[in-house]
Length: 210
Image (cartoon, rainbow, N blue to C red; front, top):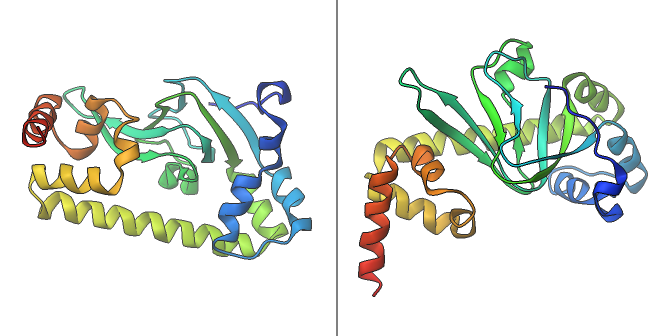
């Protein structure tokens, strides 16, 4: 799917200065004030509606996405036709199918907006050019990928090591605000539950807290 740059009249001009992304990058590597315009030149600012697909299974992932405001989810559809969510991305998080992006091969995943979302899109070739123009960005992207991979490993451990109820309580304690933003069926899919089982856990929790 080709994404068009956001029209300037669709968003407050303060957000056009890419300050949130610059701030995020500076938590990992140095970035001088005069380098911010170089960074901005390689990104497109995009606004998508709820349920917009940024990637569909079978397509080649052509960009990675930094969430300025909103929420994305990554999922696949299993043999029974059920959606299995593997990842979410909220403000200041990245999302892409990195296998498809790196190899420029068809993706096995969907990436979809959970709510109206504003994001910075960085094309595959644009990232190569950006890393050449600003060499420290190579380190930034490496650190981001390492962080994402570590989180994926830890989530896999929790899926094997914790009971389903323990997994729910762990996730809710770590991301309480996020729990209120996503539909219950999506949370259940991400945690590996049925929506009915998640409802039972929440009812049990509500009864304990009375």
